Length: 106
Length: 225
Image (cartoon, rainbow over all chains, first blue to last red; front, side, top):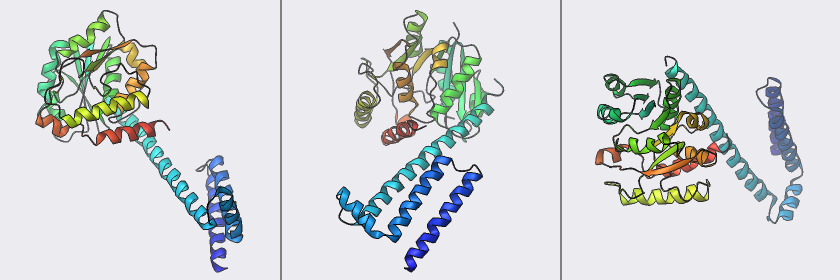
């Protein structure tokens, strides 16, 4: 029970933070919405673990906990890839500044 | 016809003057882009008649080439030649590269190491990686099979073609990106044989075999920009 309460508080706190960042225009509406869906799914699985098992059985995975781990790995992979992409975007902006400086006397 | 050579240079203090003097007879002007070198390449290049631009920090060969290309366009180039600063590529090849452009037969001309003139001192591993790169370029990037050397850094193009080839890869993946942009446009392109000589010195500094994986990774990331 204690674990479920702690997890729920963490989920709700993250949701509050994401929508606050959205209000400050630091997070897009689409990301905030995705986050909200994720939190709702998280809350449902936290309080009704059997739902995860039912979905796991439906997709052919033995246990609900395994399904959560697999999804977690996929999610982490996507997040790391996104980080790489945004890193490349920042690098290109840096290049643009360096280039403008190099070309200013041409 | 104003031919401007663009030469990106990184840590080339000992070779830059020879590289510039080597290509001088074949072009109207040379633009050297010193890409964040900390070994005095900039001061050495300044001793020559070349225009020397400076990247405050290292941004990669692709980024330096693009800076130089933009400078060449601003300087009124008719033809822009991309050439390395390590002296591996034979400067005499420049005449062969720009000839089809002068004759109006092509907009972009690539130098190829595999069109009859055998590269001197190329290690077997490098050759194997280039063959794999060719297969990757063809099957994954859709670069035509008749392209014999997709990783060649020696190329010439008209100023108009240079304006249209908006490559964004800062590091080594620019070669594949340029090829992809050229072969998917209506620009007329061709390859001409060029002689390349590898020495112990240039092999130590140049692209490593492991860079092939980095190129693939950068191309993949570039698709999501």
